[in-house]
Length: 386
Image 1: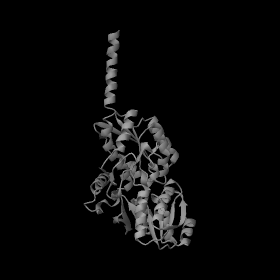
Image 2: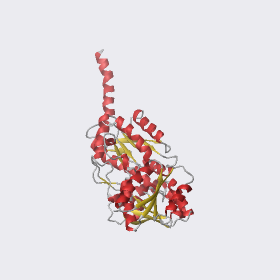
Image 3: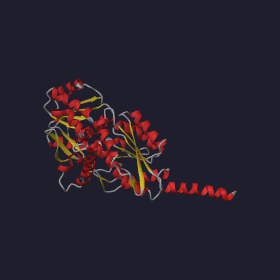
Image 4: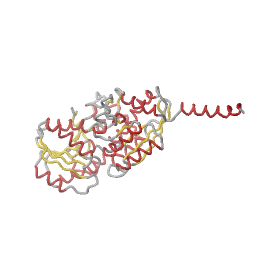
């Protein structure tokens, strides 16, 4: 009887050990592939199909869900991916409000998370909640530095601000206002609009009555075109700035001729082929551009897809280190993966060079930004953004 029982148990035990040794890495993704942020989320979704399916001898599965640009859905997706799909890592979401809502779930379940949204508040300060959270896009504070520097050099003294009426717009105003004050730039109007608004005439009339030298529009994707088109329709002649949240071709298409002359800070990927050969990000940016356009067609690449690609770059760097301590599918592996992400050093990606540490879960520096101007309906490198 004992012999029969042992014979039955040995294969099961062997299978369990083999399963652990060969455990698959599961990555749970929530993106805004529909809704107001779809022009950002679709290239992100497309990019996950291009990420490595094997890292350090382990197969990698990407489980991708759509949160429809909705905060509640993003949170539900996150909880489902962690509790039902048992993922080792969460990636998402596309936009700031969704990402901020996901942080509590990641922290509660001690699951590392990589956001593809811009707000510095997603990863800063690195407290007990945010110690599990990382991100790939440049911070709004990082890009605000570039904008205020450009404004100061251009002699701009008075600025009007109009941004999304959510965490993205609020985060941008907070960071921009601090830096504008340091540069002696006065903010003389401060307006908001919703991502799904169809008119901002009232806000634009208030801005124009203040007669600013320049206007900063803090929106993302195609909805950010609405204030700019309205400014042009009303005859505004001053300089217009946008954020890196509009750095895709869908924005150019929707905004059309009303975008001409606009300045914005952006990741090097947006103008990868225009970068000097000495730029340390050029090679890694073009690598993503080539891979994406091979799959989806010439001219299809988007900086937002680059943020998704860079999550794969970080994963590729961190997984081998995490595997030295634990196997996928365990609490110990998730903790080891978090620790490995926090210690990524000099890793080139499509938007910059990552150097993470315990106090910086973004890890990008000035090499991750350039100033761009829209000229003849195209992105044109305008210079570095120091």
